Image 1 (tube, rainbow, N blue to C red):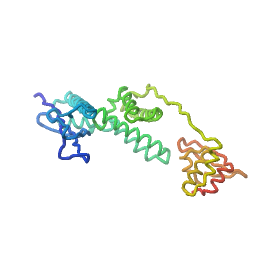
Image 2: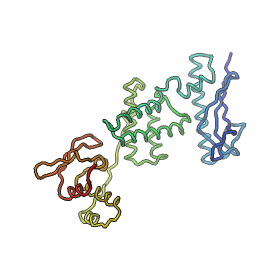
Image 3: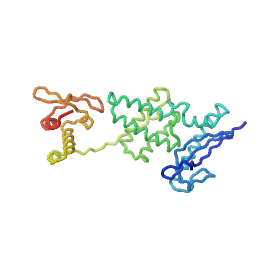
Image 4: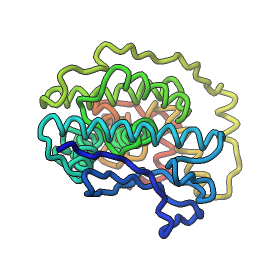
Length: 308
């Protein structure tokens, strides 16, 4: 018997969003059996064409939404056809499960990425930095938005990650997310690491970012003159917090310690050898040991602000 497979997009009018827009749902029907799933799209009910299952008009929003609905239809159909080649007894629930990747979630990019981030978080403060963790979180967030906009679904399988997927994500970071060239460079390096881990676990045959050319841009960094530093030192600040901010900035200028290194500085990092005082610590970002000689000005700042 031939399967009667169809996909219908409809509005969930009885559960409007706070904005007044109605969620767009997808209904899969095979031989009279049905399964529903969210498209993660919404529209003003008056702009919905019920017979055609699409948004009325030629506005940018209408066009983009209709394109995403067609992409969703294409991927749902592809899931059905993959299942049909395995077994002719395909149900709507099977298509939904195949689409959402619930049968083998670990083989999906965002799920794998989320497991990596959860493990990474437990290592923060031990051998990992909170700043690096936040970088991975940002990449995951952008990937989730990119996949939802391009593929119309919540996740994507590793088998679908192609060079075109990578170039599309690069363009998304630049155009939609409006990231700078150096931020994109940092994000793609992090994404490359995730794909490398997937390859090591046998989830990906080849890293599509392996041969991808990543470039950073030279940034000309400004600097303060000695006169400008003296003017900052001479500021008459009555607020205790502002004094602490000013002194912390000056201390960093004269020691070369970063903001994160300064935040982690305690009494145990300050040592005396003869008449000279030193700071011995490790860089938060790299873990590299560093020794800094304390001259008169930074030493005076330390004396003024007792370390915790």
